Length: 111
Image (cartoon, rainbow, N blue to C red; front, side, top):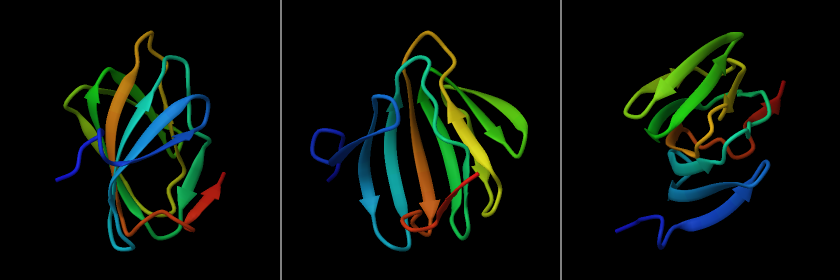
């Protein structure tokens, strides 16, 4: 069994947290938390297809120049080679799950 309590933890960006729930070459599932006012660097993945699903809070996901506002219990898919950037423009922390197939390790290109 896996949870935030026992998963591999890492920090990224400006004080954001991630917990690797599944960490295989063919599949990655990560629980992430972004404090208010933080953002990821705009990037794309050459091979990986991703699905972002918001657990709590509100996230803004810019996908190829179009902004999607995601509330709790909403998600969106990002195809390979499509530039995207996750942002938390709200006043509260945002938690979400990102599923990647295959893994994004070594597959990321900053835009």
